[in-house]
Image 1 (cartoon, rainbow, N blue to C red):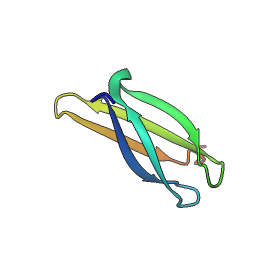
Image 2: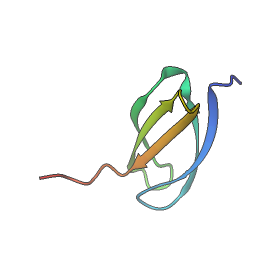
Image 3: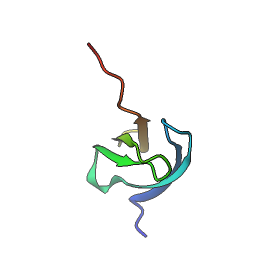
Image 4: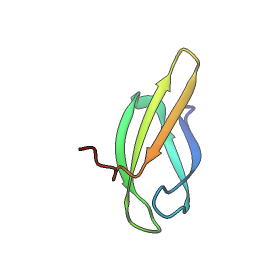
Length: 68
């Protein structure tokens, strides 16, 4: 396992199910979707690599909020 991969425990924004996700920071900032294994709804992941503070910031949301 490389030092660019870490594991994070998150909670599904739809059903509250706890999920362990592997985060690969070698690709830089990322914006992607994956589905919850419990409720099968899409989870939106936004990964930001803060190189200055040497931190990984992960934001998740349901991405079902619509702006009119």
